[in-house]
Amino acid sequence: MAKQIAILGSTGSIGRNALRVIDALGSGYAIIALSAHSNVELLAEQVRRYKPKFVAVTNPDYVAQLGELVGELDVEILAGPDGLTEIAKLEEVDIVLAAVVGAAGLPAVLAAAKCGKQLAVANKEPLVVAGELLVSEAKKNGGTILPVDSEHSAIFQAMQSGTREEVNKIILTASGGPFRGATVEDIRGVTLEQALAHPVWNMGPKITVDSATMMNKAFEIIEARWLFDMPVDKIEVLIHPESIIHSLVEFVDGSVIAQLGEPDMCLPIQYALTYPQRVAGISKRLRLGQIGTLTFEKPDFETFRALPLAYEVARTGGTAAAVFNAANEMAVEEFLAGGIKFVTILELIEHCLNKHDVKASASLEELLEADAWAREEVRIKSHKGISA
Ligand code: MG
Image 1 (cartoon, rainbow, N blue to C red):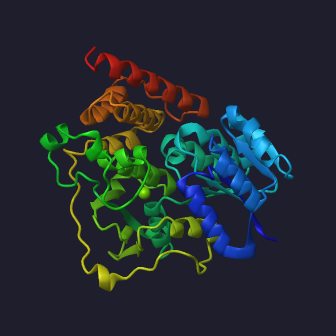
Image 2: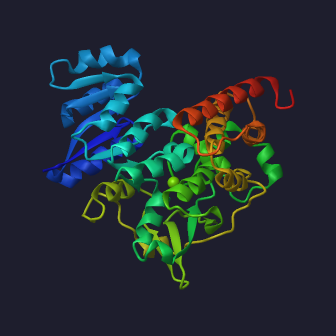
């Protein structure tokens, strides 16, 4: 029997790459469900091609349009965020690939964990915002969480070299973003255009700004903390501008095992689908002879405040990371709209973290409440000024 895959967020970059990977994997894998927020034209094309039994449109305004586009096909259309959760819980689903942008996919991801599914997590929010809850639900219900984020996939792969007790620390690599080497002073003058130019990965504007502030790496520290049940002081960040080593694991004997590859999401996506097996696929091959030199630097915690803040947030636990994530999402939105300066993104996040009353061992409702509070706080402060 083919493994039945549900892709939450199939029209985004991860979703589209996942479909390419699944195409190449052949008959052992089938698409049973797809979802999109509003890009129903692409979703309709995907439905024609992959013939899923279920499809969810999370923005209810677009449901009717999809109905017109695929009306004659034998597919059940589900509407709204609840439709997404329904898909994640389907009896027939073996693997849920979660690639929904933002905190919107959280209830669905949690539902998949509660149903004991194999859960391939591609976006950062589930593990950042609800890592503690998600991991404990998966554990309780026999689910597996497999990372798709390239660094965490690398760590997960490197960890196969020993037992969990033999791991001494995790070394998370970072490209350093477009402002690598910048000083605190340089960062003050950064424009929107400068923040949107990334040297290695070609990504959407939100993720590109997260790379410029190094917030993406900050999130990855928190992700790793939950995914690998690793105290944060055993997680280290290493700047590696070429993005060829995707991360490393140091074992107790001093041996360091790394995973290398071209910067290409197809490999981590595929590994999360075929684990514990490895199969031939469409990933680009690494030619180290042509690359020649790999370089490394220590991260600059003074210029990139997101990094030390992430350690604090991970140590605090509870609702702190939900605030960290939501404040960032909202502040980046304000920055992209031209409402605030680049440096103000981190100032707003720090403001929210200082003002927030942390709740320990938070439920999904409490996490979403903290998320909503931080968004509103950023919205108010970005229009009135932080000191107001
Ligand atoms: Mg990453």
